[in-house]
Amino acid sequence: MADPLNHGPTEPRPGARTALILLLGINLFNYIDRQVLAAVEPLIREHFGVSQARMGWLAMAFMLSYMVFAPVFGWLGDRFSRWKLVAVGVLMWSLASGATGLAGTFGLLLLTRCFVGIGEAAYGPVAPTILSDLYPVAIRGRIMAWFYLALPVGSALGYVAGGGIASAANTWRAPFYAVVIPGLLLGAWALFMREPNRPKPETAADPAGGAAAAPHRRRSQDYLSLLRNPSYVLNTLGMTAMTFAIGGIGFWMPTFVYEHGYHKSVDLGRVNLIFGGITVLAGFAGTLLGGWAGDRLRGRLPGSYFIVSAAGLLAGFPMLLGMIYAPFPYAWAFVFLSVFCLFFNTGPSNTILANVTPPAVRATAFAVNILVIHALGDAISPTIIGWVSDHYDMRTGFLFVGFMLLVGGVIWLCGARYLQRDTARAEGEAAAAGDAVAGDAGPVIAH
Image (tube, rainbow, N blue to C red; front, side):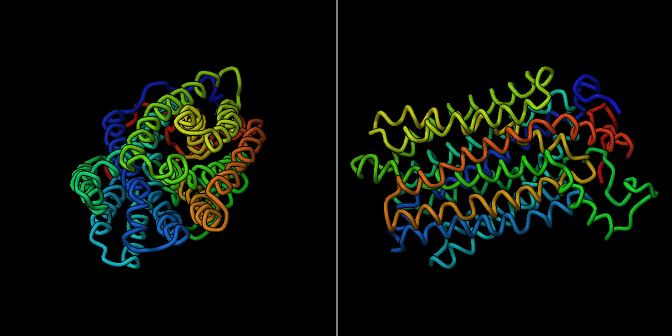
């Protein structure tokens, strides 16, 4: 078995850069669409006359549909053309976003957010696996950082565009219409992309030594192999804790600043503009530096991706305290530092998922990860913060979920000891299956 720390190709496959550009663009609009809702939350709440707890249901509806359907599309992604799944997902969520703006009742609003979640479930589990097949282990951390750079930048644009367009058009509905056309164009482009060559789960070698596993047996082996992978399990638990905290805080932050920081004395559009700008700068720097640090330290610290991820969360907790309790406008400095720390783990943690799972089951691995981190993370934390805010105050809600940053940091530190072994095992399984997962310049074929 080759040592993945020192061996293997270092050049991406043909078509890798085009795939990265397209997937980065799609991911950008993915997060723009998610945060547009948060940007105009006070306006929607006032329009429909509902409580903050009920507004949390909108985030929960999206996340429930996203996490429930992610394993379905992850299973399909290991067996069929991932680019076609990406195209279907992007087209669906773009149309559903437009439908959100047309919703006349709160019930219809909930329904459209469910369809947005289903569309993103077709995209989320398979997009990073395409990049994992196109780029080698040696530079995968930096590539994942570029791909997930869409998270802070897209989220920031969602806040800025959502608040700005709503203010200019004098309606909360307008921002949801604005994302439709770009999404449809990106989805159409994905239809013409070619699939990287890879083994299918049904044709991969049976771990017990047989030629090929029966489909139903192979499916159960896919999930069992993930449970027997300590790096995968601990990384998923760490990401769950992080997602619980950042999901709830991210959804309610514009509302917190507008209603509690400035006591409605500053225009909501301006709040979103400032917060969006901070998220772009801090998130951009944190995401790229985290991916760079994970790759840079890899030769000296075999568990570097875990260690870098843990460092970001543990450093982020005191920054969060400053953000909650410092008066505005001084608290903006702590907002910047908090965002930087929270995004520092984005590239490394997703690189762990890619590196410790063989390509034949990688989409399933990402899908199961999505199910767990959202089911126990941001599917419930916005509602929890909303409930605590209705009964106490939003600072208490933020503090409650913020403690999960410490939990996630400790879990990630525990995973560092397993990373090198589990990465080597995944690379060995890929080689045994006859696939150059390390990123050799193999043929690119369409399914």
